[in-house]
Amino acid sequence: MTLFRLDASILPATSSSREIADIVEQEWTASHPHDEVIRRHLGSQPLPAEAWADAVTAGFTPEADRTEGQRRATALAAELVEELTSADAVLMAVPLYNFGVSQHVKAWIDLVVAGSEPGAALLEGTPVVLATVRGGAYGAGAPREGWDHSTAYLRRILEDVWKADLTLVEREFTLVGVNPALDEFTDLAAEMQQKAFSAAREAGAALGVPPQDLAS
Image (cartoon, rainbow, N blue to C red; front, side, top):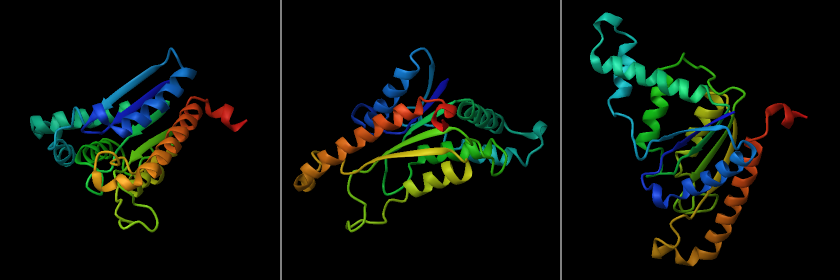
């Protein structure tokens, strides 16, 4: 089996989403010690900002008339689609930035869409774990309830458009211990961290099980 792992943190050394994804990957590797992990880190190596527009406009331009940028963009889009769809399992670590999806992740999604057929179910039958983290609290009753415009969007793309078999692992209050204004939530943040780690272990173990074994 092949695992495709996508990271998006702009601070990989201290990333909470990476921390959760590492646990998932460790569980997967325990079941597949000799299998391959394909990695793409959008935070450390972002995709070209102009590539999506070039890929889209290339679709309306005769191949002989395409610019060099359009040719590079279509090749990149095809590469990203192949990278994603050839994997047997997918692991994504995507933090919440400024209440939404970062430009790096959006560029990746847009290029994958541009490089595939409209509405293509690219991940149908593929198990996907999405590890997402939020610096504050966005749940029911929180002052910023409803301000998370990332998670629902990612679920829409992964589950509804690409038809992935999605497992979501979430953690909030990752800025507790970093932002002094959140110190009163230290115990709650620690509890959320442990729950997320436990969920990551379960998700990683399940990710490494062949679908036919899960069905049985």
